[in-house]
Amino acid sequence: MARRKARKRSSRTDPTRQPFLGNDTEINLPHPDHTESAQAALAAANYLVHNESDRRNYDPEIPPANDRCYFLELSAELRNNIYRMSLVRHNAVTMDLERKQTHYSCSRKYDYSVKPPMDPALTRTNRQVRHEALSIYYSENIFQIPMGPTEYSFRVSGPIQTLRSFEKHLGHRAGLLGGVSMFAQGIDGLAYIKAQFLSDNEVGIELDLDLDARAHKGGDLEFHPIQKYCVCDLQKVAHKYKRKGRSGEILLSIIRRFSDKYFVAQGTGPCLCSKCGLTMMNRMQD
Image: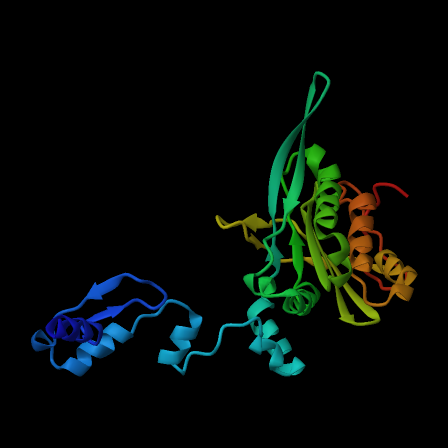
C-alpha cells in the first residue's frame, strides 16, 4: 500500500504531465531525459495560454485589451495633422457614374447616379474619430462630379441628375464640403467649373472652357482652358447664402445654378461682362 501511494504522489508532481489551464485533459510531453533539461520541459508545459490574463502574465510587454483608444489621448493638433496626411489628396476625389434603367409604361429611360468612394477606413475607428476625420476629409478635398456620356440628352439634364444623386448620398454631410468641381459637355467644347472656400467667408469660383479636352484610359481628363469665363452671376449665389457661413450647401447651390441655367452654345458672338471684362457664358434660360 505504501508503494502505491508513493507512485500516486510522484505522478501528481511529474512535470511531464501538466494539465491545461482551465481543462482537465492532460498533455503528454517528452520525458526530461529527451529534452535539454527538466526546466525546459516544465516551462513548455506551463506556457499554456487560454485567455487574455494568461497572455499578460507570460508577456508583460503586451498592453491589456480594453476599450481605451490611445489615439484620442494625442493632442487635437497632432490628430488633425494625422488626418490631413492620411485623407487629404492633391488631386480631386473622383466619383463613379452608374447607369440605371427605369421603365415608364412602354417607354424605356436610362438615368445616371453618382457613386462616391467609400469613406476611408480610418473613419470606422470609433464615433469621435469618425466625426473628426470626416470633417477634414470633406472640407479639405475637392470632389469632382463626373461628366457622363456625351449624347445630347444627357448634356442638358445629365449634370442635374448627377448633382442630385451626389447630394442625396451626402445627406447631412453636405454642409462639410469645402470644394466641388464638375465637367459639363457643351456643343463648343468641355466646360469646367470649380467652387471652393478660400476662407470662411470667401468662395472662389473658376469657370473655364476647353475646345479639345481628351480623356485618358484611366478616365482622367487632360484639360487646358483657353480662357476664363465670367462668374459674376454665380458669385451672386454665394453672396445670397453668405449668412450660412462656411457651408457646403453654398457650393452645391452654385453648381446647381450652373447646371440649370448655363450651357456652352454655338454660333453666338462673345459678350463681355461690364464688371469683370470676361466672356459671359450663354444662358439656357433666364
